Length: 296
Image (tube, rainbow, N blue to C red; front, top):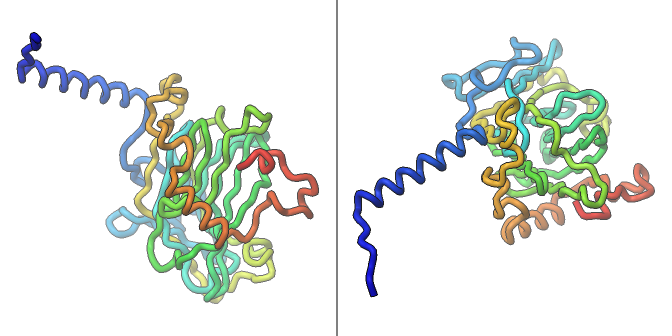
């Protein structure tokens, strides 16, 4: 049988060509680089209460009786993954809320994906509340007690958002999945780009034990820390083909549903650490919300 001679230089040319083609294609579809606070974010609230420390690699958020603080990404994104490492307010943090979330910044038909870390009295577990707004409808709160002390060291919190689902994760352990059930008439955030936001503020009317535990201002100022920001997604404005491109890594088969290991971790969290789920709150929802019936 005859064989085709394959010259090494020809092979190299082909490999280089394929690499350049894939690199060029990716550069037109998605932002993929480490984010920096100065380059990618802007302070939205109380710039005196947000400080860059450790050579600018870490952000310190400050809450005192004068003010809380907040910042936002300079850009908006449609699908992708965002993450940040956070070290939360230590000690008696009751009444404080540290938030990391995505928001379309539209008043009437808002899309939003929330992490809200609810402070607590010393010795009690920190609670993380997640919420999903789709086409202006929210009130989809779930709460998980974290299984570690999130004020002792940094932990990574991430939101994966694609056409199939939204996955909230803690150190790559999924704690919440909101599936795309549009085929069943259930809204899913997919049309509005969202910015990335963070705030530290006082909310002792509801944050800790439903507002029973009030903030102790003698413990102020309160500090939270953030670093290792990652923003990967389709920047808007940008190429209109990016959000629908199946070549974006977050749309790949491996990210369309939880794998077996993730599913086991997810069940463990839900069985052992879930303390509130709006789906089972009959006082608020005598009729189970449709997305809960469909499977979120």
